[in-house]
Amino acid sequence: MDRVSASKRSEIMRKVCQKDTSAELAVRKLLFALGYRYRLHDRRLPGTPDVVFPGRKKIIFVHGCFWHGHENCPKARLPKSNIEYWSTKVAKNILRDTQVQEELRQQGWGVLIVWQCQIKAQEELQGRLIAFLS
Image 1 (cartoon, rainbow, N blue to C red):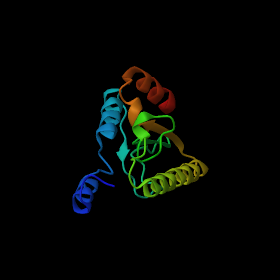
Image 2 (image 1 turned 90 degrees about the horizontal axis):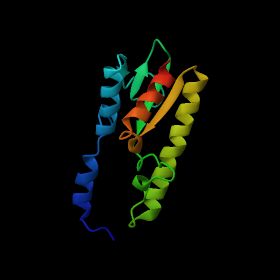
Image 3 (image 1 turned 45 degrees about the horizontal axis):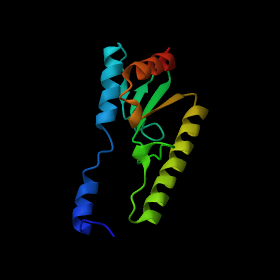
């Protein structure tokens, strides 16, 4: 059973951001410091990518480990209550992410996934971003 009431859980879930998350802001700040300029959340593209480089035809998605089912990550552990709901939800997110990435690649876009747990390793992340955008 859930430790909070249904109305309180609903309130908590409404506060979960879909864009401008702390992980996304950290990636954008790093990109800007490296001299890259980009577009945000282009709704014309499948999946509404977090960061778009139209001239380079490159896209970066910043995924939360829990919501997008990051494999072997402690942040991606499912809650103990309502397991069926959460496992189904995360599985659907993973399937949707895979389909969106494939569609973007077929359209000629390069796609990079940055996971929430990778943000702390700034030097490694910086190297990945530079290599991807070069």
